[in-house]
Length: 195
Image 1 (spheres, rainbow, N blue to C red):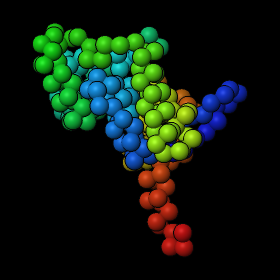
Image 2 (image 1 turned 30 degrees about the vertical axis):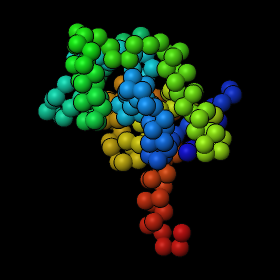
Image 3 (image 1 turned 60 degrees about the vertical axis):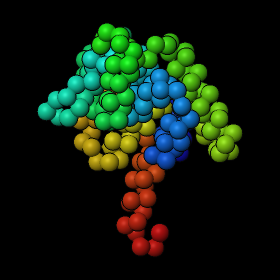
Image 4 (image 1 turned 90 degrees about the horizontal axis):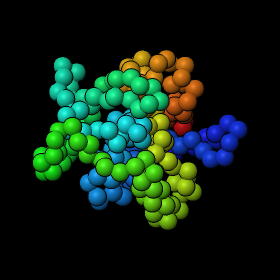
């Protein structure tokens, strides 16, 4: 887990490793909660965007299975972002099982509830792991983790900006990119014989 002070305010920005992402996802046995967390950490959605996702937004394109996102009032823009096959299947299945219209959101709660779900899961992880970093993890840190994980995997920065809905590279670099993921750091460290 990488932590960085917020400039001029309390709290920390957090970037999770892939192992920590999996630990967090494993906290959610409830399908709706798990979908919400996956949409943030595997698709880079903002809290308000998570609440708008419906089965009809999962589409197969020439670029692979994508999630069509109509951004929150913050940006009021449309974008497409990749969605992992297992998350796409779960969203489509939930829609089928509910028998609801395909435009009905699959996560039917408030942003306050999303934050509470993350707070409860990270509180449990703090107790289980004794890692004090879990106390700082919030919903937006999942989006931050997603973006940095893509860059650490050498996804082109402009593609990350496009998928994440950032207007320019400077905004992304200033607010989302952190230190490289632990996986990227280990990969680079292994290049140095004496480390």
